[in-house]
Image 1 (tube, one colour):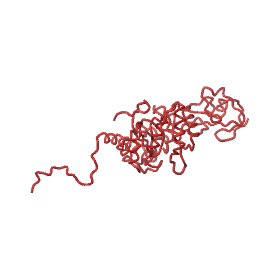
Image 2 (cartoon, rainbow over the protein chains, first blue to last red):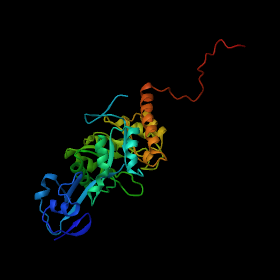
Image 3 (cartoon, each protein chain N blue to C red):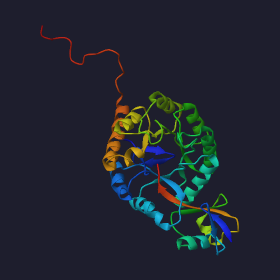
Length: 67
Length: 254
């Protein structure tokens, strides 16, 4: 299904946030990361069971240097 | 120097440090060792790899308390979501709240800032808003529950220092929460002045990270904050428009 990840159209084979993280980062539970789906933050513990559907907008963020 | 307490949490230093602009991550550790900051700010950005965690690895290894910011957010909605993401990613409900009016001036959007502060306080955040040097807005931010206010001395990254010291004094007088001078620090004397004006802490980023020698400037700002704090509490002499001899006027040879 087609979803938008960090502003980019992305084809996802899996069904959950954890599937997406595994596909992109080789890790279903990377540290220092937060995920929002359709402007709602998905708590880390919910990643394995949070369903993604076609058209969803996902943001994956981490901390970077900043003032 | 007594410890600064914000929202019931004692900070180890009155110098807060931004990490943005350092030319190399390898400088981070020596800069932090020289600055010994009470809080260290980080931003939250999109990532595509877990390797971006290099920064967090260093900060966590050093045990530095983090203060995520919402830098670059142009609306209250964006800032609230960014703060929520930061809370989830970093495990802290403290946030340096920035809602920027436009990308040229980087000045706070007063309306969006107040709206976002109100929402974040209601969601359980400890909110430290980056604000203008306006005592009225500062009071409104405290009214909605902000734990501190962070007025700018001059525009972000400008190094122009404190352009309106009277306004900073007015902010200090207007609120009963800690005042952190944020933005505009260029060198040590700016940080000392902020403390002399009654600020409780200083946040510096560019002044350190883009100095020729960031480690040396971190050390200088650390000393300046301590000196300014000491001078503030020493009670400076009043300004006079005329001279006043410090040596005795009597007993001079004819």
